[in-house]
Length: 157
Image (tube, rainbow, N blue to C red; front, side, top):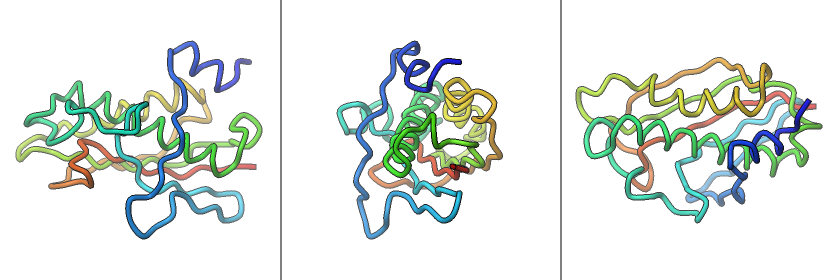
């Protein structure tokens, strides 16, 4: 079985450095065998939000760009998980839940399709243990004018 790192490499991806919080909170909390990851925005590999991932999905951000932003959020979630537990292959049991927040233009209701960017990547990288419960909501604003933010909960060893 291939490792998560192998799967990332095959997809041409790498985990970014875990982002520092932008306010008064911690990026993750570990309690027992659960790790809760604070909401991660769509920072790219350079640590910034690309112009195509800023603003309202269904407005100045296309649904396709929103889905790509959700994928970036998922990578940032996994970077925080790695910071919390070290080796993902040794520690990860299950992605329990993802919560998605889509900075949606008024009338844009296809938020579930945007969030699939994060959900699909979890399954691509983690296999069956990447299958998760999920909530997705459209919101009026997000920090840093991000198009998408994703939070998560994982079971670990």
